[in-house]
Length: 332
Image 1 (cartoon, one colour):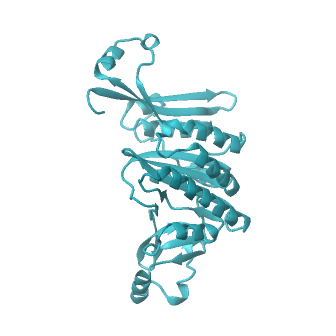
Image 2 (image 1 turned 180 degrees about the vertical axis):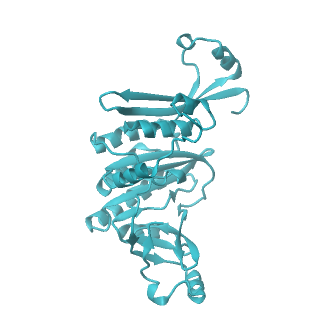
Image 3 (image 1 turned 60 degrees about the vertical axis):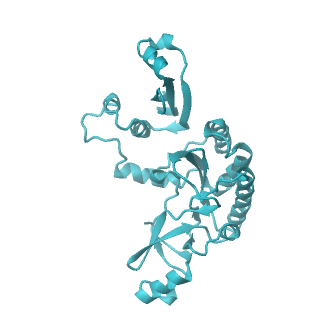
């Protein structure tokens, strides 16, 4: 940490014997000035008191299987060899990674998930205007084309009015699932007002697509910058529940304030919407810092790409005129 201060990773969990699972898990950084830190080392834990600068990084409320908790805890304390030993790892090769059967269960359970929210903090920068980030690619012949997912109905129409997509390849899948690309809010003096207007309009558009039968499940990742951090807040699950959460987020979340000032209120509302329902943890998209609803098999999609790119693909033989409107896409 900056200056003469020391930061310590901290984790806290609660176990329910009746559920045979972790029911609460959170992690934070406890920071101490140098002098206080060295005094703390020699002080018994029952006499030290709480004198640190406490910054909560994440919180999970709900039923969390022990295996998932071990994985999260090990990742959080990455580099600390004592944690796997504490958790009972017999040898180094026994890393806490989802095996094939566990992953299949997680992906299938995702389809039953009512709603989930993930808050991710990263270092980085965001542009000055509203934008969608093309983080995934679609194979077209021999080429991989970066794309943004925007849906196929009112959601796409709303986004095109808000963002210039002329230089991006925009995709809408026709399987009832919308994994919206990360929607980034630019840094400016109108951030709070812009956030309310866009999220409110996006909620209305998504509701229209749900009513029209175009969307059954959705993931909406919203990102913005505060000081040196990029905050990504993802909402995923049943379409109706996602709309409800988004409409409350505009009243709960102030993007100009630090996440610890609003994350508890978001958690409370998610639990209210979920009404105590149990669902498995969704690991899809976690490596990118978002939530994602998995697809399987071959899925039809609509694709719009810049004219220049389309002409290049046609000339190279990677795209035929008959396939330029609807392109089958695999789950990859």
